[in-house]
Length: 314
Image 1 (cartoon, one colour):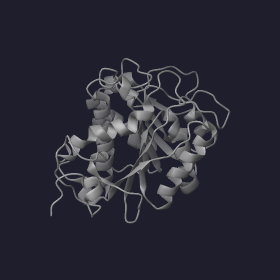
Image 2: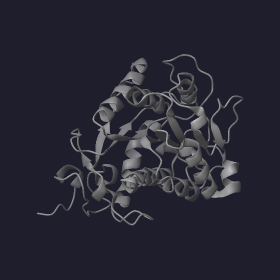
Image 3: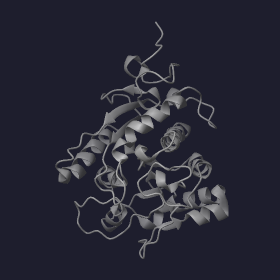
Image 4: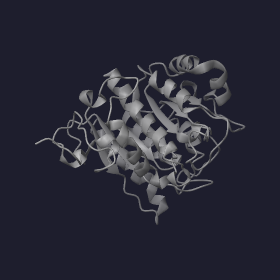
């Protein structure tokens, strides 16, 4: 019997897709199987519903759920402009969410690190939904433990997140990359930050392609620069949704005018084929400030394009 609804819990195979009503059923990301079994899995999508590290508006703890809900229409057709079903090439599952104890915030860093460590120790690519941007730091700690230090990052954001913070367990979504660079987890000379439009006296040696640079030079130039910067280095991709202008992503905690359009950001992403990605996240979606799912939908498209990138590399 064919599966007409709830493929996420009824589908037997990891690969392939099922057509079902877009407005009904279990809303895993793009209807992928909900499972904790990572056997023969290529990509595990998981959420980290955490927003205790924000410096302005909270609400990103609801981001993973909102991204999943917005993704259901993407499962209906072949993704544009790829023209193929990435789930025919890759085994992608929805691994659910990382359990966190918000009443004991000093346990959060280790909980996230161990969550990601389990995924990558099973040789599975982690695609993670935040939550605020702090979650990237414990993810990078897990990455460094497995792959070694001096990783590259491709970082889409309005903020550089390299403000000084020497307290290792402090929770701040604006200091993660200060810690990661200081601890030699990432190599700033081989890392690039795209869409930046807030000032910091010390960008710590990262390559900045700020929002105005993208507007002035176009996505083709940005892609060429990014590939030249990261080269063959192992690379983690982190996409803060506030990289987009608030007109394209109002549902976020620290919106900054003058950002990238959805079209610009997606064009850059879609042309990063060949970069040696070891993990990725999409963070800072705060649906309480969204309108008509505009922000959640943009985040779902970003995540879908990351999966298509991986499938294209395969």
